[in-house]
Each structure stands twice: as C-alpha cells, then as structure tokens.
Image (cartoon, rainbow over all chains, first blue to last red; front, side, top):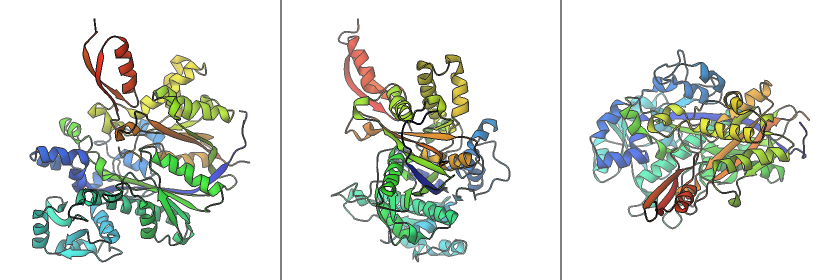
Length: 474
Length: 41
C-alpha cells in the first residue's frame, strides 16, 4: 500500500455508549403519538408488547452496543435475537451501560432547570433511594399531577401507574411545547450520561474538556429561532465542564461524522486541546416501526434512547487515531445515487491516500439493527450499503462478482444499533474499532455516514461524510 | 403508450432516489405529478 499523502492524525482518548430503556415513553415517539391520537385503542396493544428491562439488557444487539459482545459474534447468535436472549448479560458494559426508566426519570429531574418535570412524591421517595438526583426534583401530589394532565401537560408513567408530569415551557410557543421539551431534555440527559461515562473511563477531569460539540438531533430553540441550538453548552454545564464552551453540529444522520471532523480540526488548528463529541437519544424515533412489530407479534424493539460521547485529543504513538486527512464529504455536484456516495465517500478519499476499496479491513456504515427494520419492509440497511461498496469493487476490477458475499462478510458486519438516526450512522462502531485496532485484528476502518437532507424539504440532495481510522504506528 | 399517464414516484435514499425515477419515467412518456425521496430509517 502506497501512502499518497502526509497523514494527519488525531487521537481518540475514549468513547462511551449508553442506552436508556424507556418503554413508557415509546408512546411519545413521533409515530406512536400520531397513531395513538388517531386510534387510542392501540395504546393497550402497544403496552402489551413493551419489553421489561431485563429483556432489554439481554438483547444481543444491546450487548454489542455497550461493548460486551464484538459485532463479529452476532453472526453466530441465533435469531430472533429478541427471543434468544443472552444468558448472564449485564447492564454494565465495557463502553457504557443500559439505564432503566426509573434512573432515566431521575436524570431528567436532575437536569431540569425550568420546573418542567414533576414526580409524584410517594412514588419518587419509594424509588429515589436507589438513585438520588443531583438537583432536588419538583414533587407533587397525585391530585396535582392529575390536574396538570387534565390541562394538557404530558403524563409520565411507570407501567400503568401515573408517576409524573411534564409541562410546557410556554403556553403559546409550539417550540416550547411539553412534547418538544421532553425530547430536548431527554437528549440532554442521555448525552450528559454518556459524557460522564467517557470521562470516567479515561480518568479525565471534566474541567479538562475545553470544547463540546453536540450532534444530537433535536432542534433546541424557541418560536423565533426553532433550531437555535447549543445544546452542547447545556450538556457541558450539566457534566461540570466548567472550562468548556461549544456548539451544535447538525447534518441529519451524518451529524456525528461532521462533528468528529470539526472536533479533530479544532485540535489540529490548535484552537482546542480536548474536544468532546456527544449525542443524546432521539425520543421522536421511539416506536418508529411499532406497527410492524405489533403486526408480527414482536416486542416493540425501538424502546431505547441511544447516546455516545467521544473524547478527542492529540495523537499518541501506537494508539488508534482518526486520519483527519482522510475526511471526505459528498459534494453537491455528486448527485444522490448510492453509487456516487460510495465513490465520493470511499473510493476517492482512499485513492487520495494511495489505497483501494480492498485495502480497508472494516467498513462502518449505517448499522441499523435489521431485526427492527426488516419486518417493516425497510430492508437490511447495512447489507444494502455493503453490497453497494462490493459492487463498486467489482466494477473497478478489484474483486470478482462471485466474491461480493465474501467482501460483505469480511469487511462488513451485521447491524446492531437502534434506529436512532444519528446513532447507527457508523459512529456506533467506534468503540469496537478501537478495540480491533489495538489488538491488530484490523489495520484500519472506514467510517461512512449518510444524511437524508431531502426530509427537510429544502433540497432533493442526500449528504454524507467519511473518515478512516488507523493506528499511529509512525 | 405511457404518454399522458400520471404517476407519483417515491424513491429511497439507499436505493433509487426520487429524481432518478422521475427522470426515467418522464423519458418513457409519463407525467410525474409528484416525486420525493424518503428515508425509512
């Protein structure tokens, strides 16, 4: 392999991944909320198909997500994963943890600075002994909570029990409606949880972070500036990163990749020394495919909020690094065809470094869990992406057509991420990639993410961003 | 044979995008009344 450019490497000090299991918030996902309003009788059916926390812990894709099982092992595990649960699985993982709903509610109360969320006092005291919030929660009687719900506030449940309420931030501002603020606060607390976990893992004091980039999906703002932003700074404050500021980077599902490139660029430019790239979970995407799961008599598998945090700093010898000089973007002129994506996000940047498609040991693409998407007719998204790369390799004469399946098997993996948009988009593999690079199981990994810009109705274009990870052996 | 027939084209991000389908159908004589690309994840 001939290296055609001078490598620019940025270190990855640590990465953490967490999942908050919130079955009783599935009803507030965008799709369930709409369908349940149209057909309230669906509520009981939905409730009957929700998983308990132990089932969520022992779900193989979740164990891969938090780092207890390498993605390569998924091939060996029997389907359906939601029935063939992992014996002895734990909520604590090598990269992070699964958090139960009670703990999530406590985090929510602890991060609320505007008295948005209240819990029923007896219920809260009964369970608060397990996890005390950092900020005193607003507690109310059940009658008060019922009265607020009757006025339009959002009820919070634990199973069938009404245990809390989430209020709007403004009576007339749709950007500050209870549903919107619940999404935003959920993103904030899950991102904060992931960042705390990342700092703990690498033994870093929160004061050492000087820049935080949030690539969460939520548009935080008010009616005059719906996407006003800087959830990053709210997360930095919540985690105690007193010396940091930051900003948000948004590009639909490709947001995390852009955030990584921009964070690395700040370090390379000497603007910041330690950058945290963080994302919280997307509450809007809970239960997105719930109808097909009900139809197939499956549990509703989109019941978790995914989050991650990455700590970037200068490169260290012999450690896995991000090749900043490999960063590639999908230009406007490239058009929206999947082949053009593969050319601009894989073939061309690799060629710039003197590499071919077959010089990449592992590709991280959109790693959506197929067990969630296939029943709804959305297909096996990672497999489609891997086949596109394999087909391009055939077209370039790098492999034979009959070798496409081997290409996919050897250089790809099964999807294991919840359908949380930004979370599955390549970045979910970073923790396992670091492990595989450290153990020399792979020499490199190319991360490729796409963004569906057309969904915002401002352009017909898609988007994408990629970069290579390797080991700093120089 | 397709001339004047009205059609809606829905593409998919990881498959064939809407504008590409629309261009092919227009070439075949269809009148594309709406086209969009969707993302199902």
